[in-house]
Length: 288
Image (cartoon, rainbow, N blue to C red; front, side, top):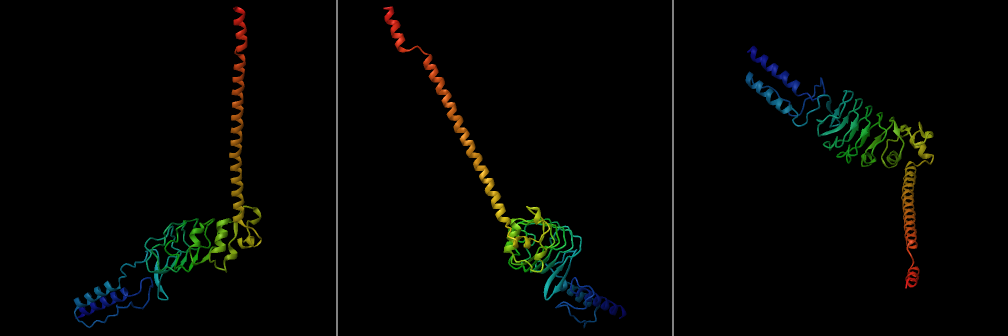
């Protein structure tokens, strides 16, 4: 009798540890379907109940990355991977994730389709990493539903406008070593930037030294248009190219005409060097 009671207590302890929500240590909450009471007195039945509850409580198909913590926030799946020394985005993030925090890691790049399988994602925090490169299709698949994207405090100098302009999310781009150029200006004009952080988008480098260290918004308010500067540069390059081609054509025509003239002069000189028809006739008559 004592052994049976001890086995039932062990099974009950196993159930309580199993039925806690994943990622919430020490919680006393139980998952739906895991509340069971032992009415049997058979040790084998108790063990069977414990094993059945284990099968119910294992979240098949929604596993949590080993370096992260998965929990519930307002009834939605939150995946917390902050300060885990990650160097790349985890591959096994649950598909039903709604909130994803990857801040304070060592991620250097966001590759194409990095979050494509996360169709429910609404908030993405990539702040305080070492991100330098963002591919054009980095956020493909989450553009429609994403509401907040935090890229602040990274090492981003430039970003393809196609990567951000397709998003409807509120963007945080502050505290990056931005190179002020046309693409960044277009992002500032067309994307939904967080108004509280837009003043912290500063020109780390720029086409002119006087813009360095100033907020991009302040530079644009002063009447600077980086896109028109690029257009003027393109126009000048096209003009120089066209002028070069035109000069080559002119030189070719001049050389062609000069070469033909020299050929004609040689031909005329050759004809002059030949004995004339009249002199030949006089010589013939004298001989007769």
